[in-house]
Length: 178
Image 1 (cartoon, one colour):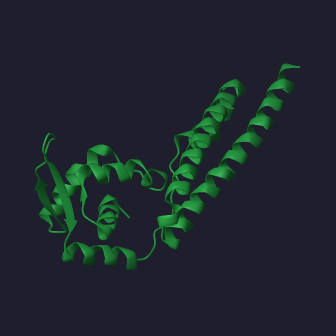
Image 2: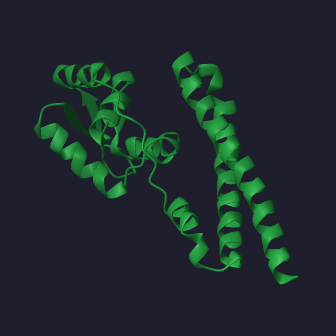
């Protein structure tokens, strides 16, 4: 899976402006896929050259013009090829987990600070995803619902594990001070 596959999937439902595509990457897709803002527009330009999508410049009164992208038949074929290709394994790339793994080389106070920071961040992600789920659930396809529910359960499990780890690290810190 790459950004191209995700963009083609977005365009399967309806045409979108570059801004709307960017918003989807930052909104709901941010929980499951990481893409930088700087890659979206070059990717759209490349996809247009490869005839996977078309671009229409829409004139707006009182606002800057916007580009609206529509998937082509070639783009639909490409997207279906992606959907029918072998599924890639999920991968986790986490600076937090790498630091935590090597936490023995820093003081427990820093590990505790990392755990608290990760706990707060995870709590916010869980709250935001849960709010979006509540807002959009009625209009979601059952596959969307399953995807979001997996995300909610993963954040919930991560939060519980962080809280349990924080208790252990704080106990260890107290024992070492005694």
